[in-house]
Image 1 (tube, one colour):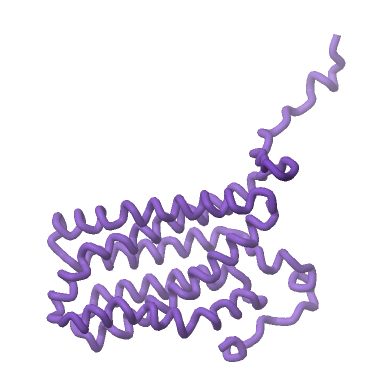
Image 2: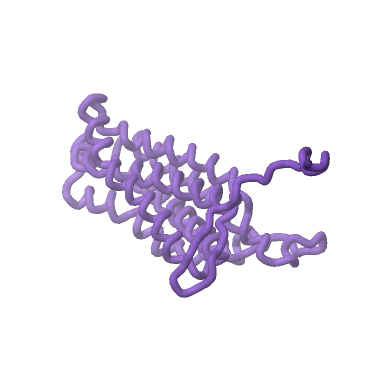
Length: 239
């Protein structure tokens, strides 16, 4: 006969996901880590799908502004130029006590606002600042997101490649679907600017997803979380 204490014993919660590497011991993927990886993968898929949606409408969008082939080249290259200039300062920002989460949220908002400004542009002179904002936001977002992902997966050294590959595959799925979605939106909506509105809205919405994530940079060192820890350095020292 079972004792009352045995009868009233609570049930165990669901066991965490177990990861097995061929050259190392078994590791457990806890619920908090699954939540972090799922949020990153979902946000990456949405952002990549929105970016891909712009591809099929770019020529028509340039034509609606009366841009030449040189103008189209400017539209495409301006964000990349901003990334080249800002990637290093963004990396320093992410590695400072500002952490990963804040730059992810801010980068998504700046990138989204730049995309909305792109949709509202009426000439090359108004288009260039918008595309620079896209590049600046994208630089901050991508750098912080990759650093956050590495913070998470480095806790599982025997499965780092598998976890990275899974998150990146989900993001690429969005890129594969995005161009088709953009083409359908442009054809049925009759507006070549609509995909830019969509990407801007998705990026701004993804900032909410990033805001739900816990910070990982500050959790890695007790000094950052202590009451006497120094305040974040001024932004000018990071540039």
